[in-house]
View 1 (cartoon, rainbow, N blue to C red):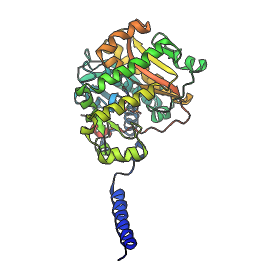
View 2: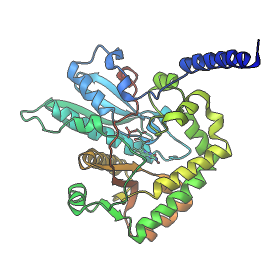
View 3: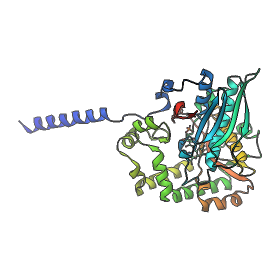
Length: 371
Ligand SMILES: Cc1cc2nc3c(=O)[nH]c(=O)nc-3n(C[C@H](O)[C@H](O)[C@H](O)COP(=O)(O)O)c2cc1C
């Protein structure tokens, strides 16, 4: 066999093996549109209860842990609970963010129930952020159906990249903030307060990336492969982290928790945050008067009301909570930005040219509902 023929046979074999390996590999990011809702086995639910709870479950949560459950007492009568197994002790040791996420869940529930003609009658049960049972709710039919457009819930998503740096227009600020000006504050990217948050966000991310328990906790909530993403239907997927194309393929097929603990992974994460922070219209801060359970739930609801308004204006929101999670950056915050109330959310904001579809996954309802 001459040399050229040998090389072409070997090359062809490698090509064939390579192509077969590629075809057998995890080839695309699993996204929400890939999931069929038919897998829900909870037959006790009435059809509209199922719809309402599905919409409710699309609420945002830190690391997409979905720290809630629903105790089903009887039709249209439930208790919303706090799922301890989904807490993030390394970054949220007092379950402040857990309660904010449950607040967002309650807001979705109210809007979704309203759109099916039900009013929610609430009874607060929790007195601490650690209580199992948070809020009892009874849905009762009302004559007037609220006209909330539920596609705002199905199309809401966290966006992390490609923010434009144009300032928010006054008409958009008015639309987003004027309903609750005492609790929602826009810091334009030209202000010294916004620059302070940029810098402190980078600092807090560096601190947190090298704090091993926090980094390990992050690793535990990353769903590297599509198989794991489909199995757990929670956490941070490659699509959710906006890792697409070849980098996404590499992560899905060859990364695991150990990679997250390497210096290289930590440094790349920090670089990424620095890039994100350099692109924005500024920041939106959401505050509360105190840190009671009621105030945290209300602040989570406030954040979700805002979050459900931004897409129609082509505005993205990216919660970046590390300043609040790292004690040394948290301690300096209020004084430096001249806000007296408790800051509960730090949201990077900006216009987008192209608004991507939602991709984060949610657990099926039968894993959410306890009887
Ligand atoms: C209390 C809270 C804290 C969050 N903190 C961060 C954060 O620090 N960084 C980040 O990239 N996303 C953060 N998020 C966004 C979540 O990761 C996101 O909501 C979740 O992955 C689900 O994705 P979705 O909002 O697109 O549905 C936070 C969300 C909530 C409710």
